[in-house]
Image 1: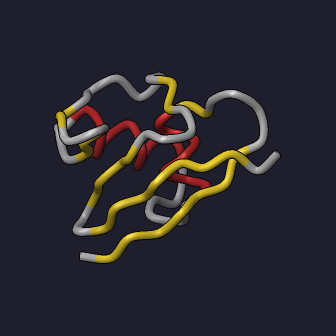
Image 2 (image 1 turned 180 degrees about the horizontal axis):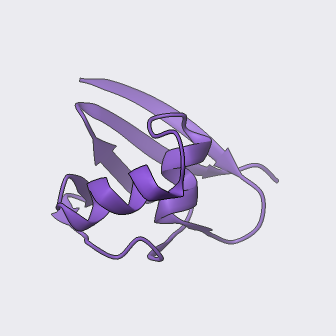
Length: 73
């Protein structure tokens, strides 16, 4: 399992946008499919809401990769 820091500007980013930004899905349709299928965990819990707001300090896990959200400011 790999871990990567994802810097964001602003207070939060939507889960679907994060998956695209991290280049683990190609587009919004792919993001929706993997999130709705329960393949994504936020802070260790499955979350099926593509619009879930993730903030600095949150972790997102998908396909064996963990992304830690950090502030870019």
